[in-house]
Amino acid sequence: MPGKGSDMTEHHLRLGNKAMVEQQYWNAVASRARDADGAFVYAVTTTGVYCRPSCPSRRPRRENVEFFPVPEAAERAGYRPCRRCRPERQQASDPAAERVRQACRLIDEALEEGVDGAPSLGRLAASVGTSAHQLQRLFKRKIGISPRAFADARRLARVKAGLRRGDGVAGALYDAGYGSSSRLYERSDAQLGMTPATYRKRGAGMTIGYTIAPCALGRVLVAATERGIAAVSLGAEDAALEAALREEYAAATLRRDDAALGPWVAAILAHLAGERPDLALPLDLQATSFQWRVWHELQRIPYGETASYAEIARRIGKPRAVRAVANACADNRAALVVPCHRVVRGDGAPGGYRWGAERKATLLAAEKQRAARR
Image 1 (cartoon, rainbow, N blue to C red):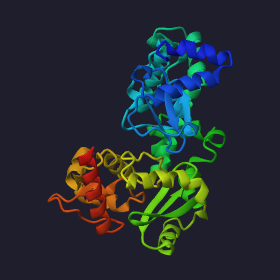
Image 2: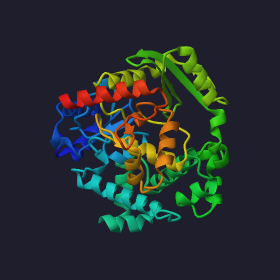
Image 3: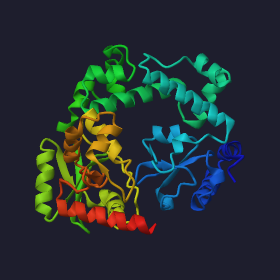
Image 4: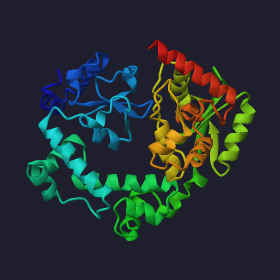
């Protein structure tokens, strides 16, 4: 099976036997084969998440799965790593793939340090023990682009993330490793689709699809852009849920789209039924950098467990920001996906909840009971 993996796989692909190779990959996923870890990753189109072959999460439908030779290729396609199996941390079983991954890490480290420009191709090649020509070929084979294009894509993704969080244009640029604003503005039309300032204000031009469905807690509204979930709301009446969405996104174009959002609704309903503890769906929420830090920490709270507002404040390195953490929880617009219901008061009492204290108590009791049976 794919242990000798990658060389044979690429040979088959060059011969046009992609279907045969993908069937081998799917067999490994279906059997959760640990010996296939490192040979490839698989991504699920309905969740936006990619995993190791041995991931213990519920197996997806075959028609919703894509395969990638390295995690970086999956991320380039827009997928996020599974928080359960952590596929981005696995070592590639193929030495060539591992060289590519090492070079990707060096590029990311340079951007983290705010370096204006990634290391040169020659320096990258020397660092991973190969020639510049060979590294260029390996990158294009494994990821589909050159090291330089990969660095550009990573840098641009950092800019977009900063602008979506509400960071100022200058801060987003420098955090992403641009030494000057002109470096981004000169290519903004081709890469960003608009100038950075316009991108930051794109909330006024958002198109959001939404749907409403019955659930164990009454009614659930799911709204999303093409990038991810924009809102998940719980309530008793459709009209009230729609009105709240229109108030929240008053400048956006809203349209009902039951079919397109069906898979995400199904994932949320499965989560509510206890069939899918890890609800890792892509998000497209407007938020400050502090809110994102809090929400990411909330997503780390295990199913069936809780944490206090003070604990979350300590975990993000802001022990005195308990009130700010509580406000970030109250501002969360993606119920369940960002599980703010798992944050309780220091005395163990449930505390407040945007969608009602009774729903919060019901959620916590159900999760605790199901976790105890696992």
